[in-house]
Length: 143
Image 1 (cartoon, rainbow, N blue to C red):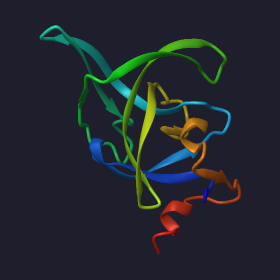
Image 2: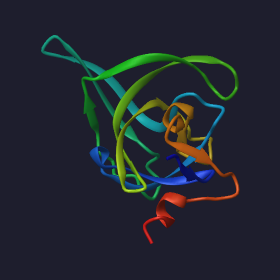
Image 3: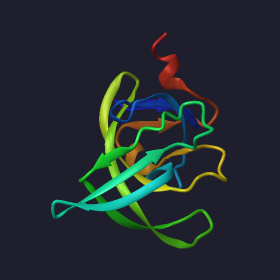
């Protein structure tokens, strides 16, 4: 059975050391995205490795952790202004409603946006229904 979520939800990204970070639900976006300040691709021992940080340094949940992954791709995405750009796409575990699942994020500059995390249709499909009058239903379900 699908769970109902609000227009904003708290999610945890345990592999990245983040708990209860607010994400905005965007049914118009296919892929989820997260704000990225630093992103660098390096070659190590003949393999490509991506290093990045998430959230803005002034965000209260920012931990400064440099995340390392060899498992990433690049994806062409239309930004909110309709311009096409190439972004890195990474995966991590996400916890909502006490359940853990794998989720993909594109890394993007969301510094001009109110919400550092956007949760798109790919994450919603088959799992959630959106009630736009509600917020933080995943957090409230624990009480």
